[in-house]
Length: 82
Image (cartoon, rainbow, N blue to C red):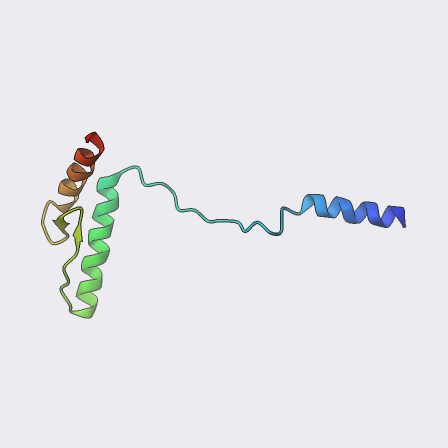
């Protein structure tokens, strides 16, 4: 009986905490320009797919502007400095 319980205890130790759910966190995006380029591309592709032109404003800059990525990163840097 002791041997059986010992084996069960060893198995429990190997298994991580059952109550704690593993989280799949997204990687941090360090390159903001790359992040906002991808976001703009995804939004424009979605608009093209559905034939609808929406109005998406991020940090006070509309997605449809040509230099959207640069303007957004400038706004973020200005906000950090304040």
